[in-house]
Length: 245
Figure 1 (cartoon, one colour):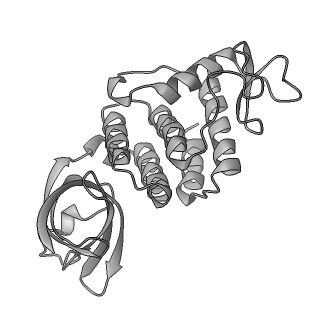
Figure 2: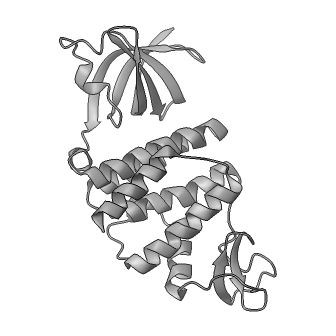
């Protein structure tokens, strides 16, 4: 056991006995770890306000490799107040936390922390949460080992692209097209841009509702076909989005 400071984001929390909590924290230094927050449910606890889901902070812990660590103190890095005051942004952020948790089960890579933290900060700063979520979903496919082909036709390598197909694994040219739905040419261009973009450099991306729907539809179908992940928060997010229409 050693006393260390780690930069992290609380992905989930659960009650432990009468007064404590069990936290799942994605950290930059150690990937996903389990942490016991003793007495954090107590009204008098200094940890109470800082042991909730979506807390982005520097955590001082007694670290135990491959075992449950113990929380000592918390220093907030970014309070994410704009997210926490907006139901839609909260819903997108919770979806990203659940997705990250699932991806880390397959690929516990430290770089994932950077992608998640930057994405949450962008949503907090006012970037479209739907677009930021799509970017993260596309980038996570690399860690899941099921990348779509977004450089050329997935079947013949032709670069004259007509549409995008889940069943065929990416872009499809006119010669290889059979009965796949033809999407807007802007959808093809933007989805490739989102796949390769550096999230750090994003300030604002304006995308029409129609294009966002086509991009989201492809990503949802692709995840369903190739990843096997089922996310409860995705279904809840869909209901929240519908209420905003």
